[in-house]
Image (cartoon, rainbow, N blue to C red; front, side):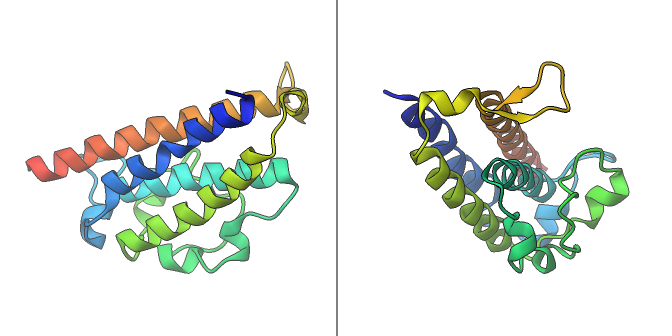
Length: 169
């Protein structure tokens, strides 16, 4: 297995996790927080998708799909490329209003497809390329891709947990 295969396998686990977390939930369920200040399923999946879209677009030197597509309107938000959910207040979390489970899945699928295409062409030497010098040490492509996968997998698990809380009660 080469580096491209390992990363493709890792990112390839996300679509099933995302689907299991959101499929069949109503817009109200997607926006329902399990407790005050907690993140709802819809926000968690929107955020994990925004992070992947932002970071992969950056390493590609391309615009985010969030900005070039008509995604923002389906979430009741402006197409702000800087808004990925980091540091959101409870009010900002509540403002993420996916119109349906399909909005989340369609946006995620578009981002995941672009990520798969990018990962398919990776070579081991590519992972050493510095992609962010704002950190000490500077962030390489390999570190960035692992970081995004780790963040996305955590949030997908959180979304599944919150979905279970909704079903329980």
